[in-house]
Length: 266
Image (cartoon, rainbow, N blue to C red; front, side):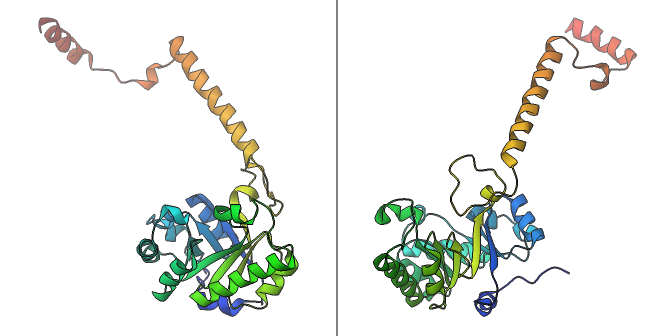
């Protein structure tokens, strides 16, 4: 029997009771794998959830599409964008835009997930790509951001690269569903990127990432096989080894004779 897809109310009811699992997936294959593996929540590119086949592949995943706020536009643009995704089967939307934009969506009953701590699109304000909240003052700023998200009507927040003690204390003091990316187990869900788990990321590996497979090596092997196959094809064409008789069709001799007479007269 397939799992029931959780609602916002379900996630709120589970707060503090168990650690949920969350992945950032980019493809239909990854979404289907997350479904079959029993993952609870996924973050996806908007185009994935807009694919009519998405819910067939991932019927029970609480799905949260998101995009960089500067690629969408104004608060009204966000509402139109969010309703389009909601209609397609999204359960919530991720938004790292300002509080007014989040409030605009929440006022129309769109479930919104905000972002606190290290926010990549705003990293310049917090000193770059590093932990946020390591002092009492900056930890209070993270807490204030969470409380502000509560005020404007968000249902949850990704909390990224914040000290585990701070993240735990905040999670215990908010009604928001707190999604930990490198912020420890004191939150409500653990969030990793599928690229990191599968070993597809060839660049910098964040401290919080964990690699479970080495897809990069497999891709290298497949690329080597791809090049070898193409090279063999080129060699076969050059040596006339391809095409063989089994790869072509022949004409009936009588029809061929008639054709040759006509084509020579043409």
